[in-house]
Length: 213
Image 1: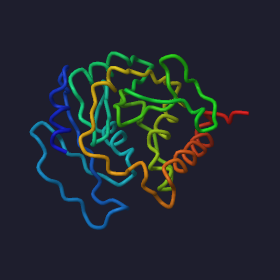
Image 2: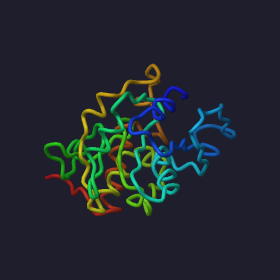
Image 3: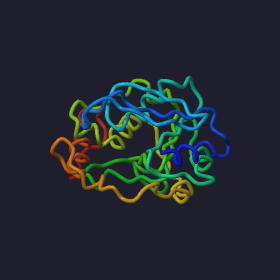
Image 4: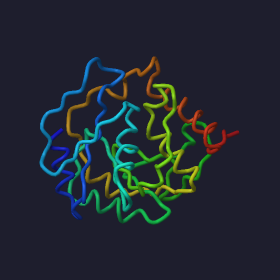
C-alpha cells in the first residue's frame, strides 16, 4: 500500500491531508486489523466496518470543509490525477475519473455528455465533505459492498451532478496484479447481483433513478 499512499502525497497541488481509513475489524476477515507503518504525512483513521464506503464517509467526517478526493487502495495515481478531479468539480458538481449511467442497471438517470450517474471510486471521486455528512450505507452486506452506487445515489438525492474527468482516469495504473475482486462473492451475491440490489435499495431509499420501461 505504501506506493499508493506515496503517490497521493506527491500530487500537485499537494494535499493538505491524506487519510487512510481502516476498520478496527472486518466482517469478512477474522481478528483485529494490524497495519504496517505508513509514510510520513499520512493520517490513520480507524472506525467501524461499514464496507468499502468507509473511505468516503470516515474521511468526510474528519474534514471541516474544502474538497475531499476519495479513492481505492489498489490504484496508483500519477501526475495530474488530483488536479484533473479538482478542475472538473465545482460548488454543485462532483467529479470522477470514470463513471457510468444507471441505464445498465435498468433505471433512468441524468447521465449525458460528460455527466454520469455512478462515480467509480477506483478512479477517484472529488466531493465537498458536507455532501456526505448524513449518508448511511445499506444494512445488507452485499448492498454495502456496492459503495459506488449508494454513495452516488446519495449525491443524486442532494441534486449533485457528477462530471467525468477522463484525464484523471488516464493518470491511473493498477498497484497490484488482478486479485479477482470483481469475481468475488459477497454475502452470497456476485458483483453484478450486488450492484443491482444496491441500485434497487437506493431507488427506494432516496427516490432516485426510476425503472426504465
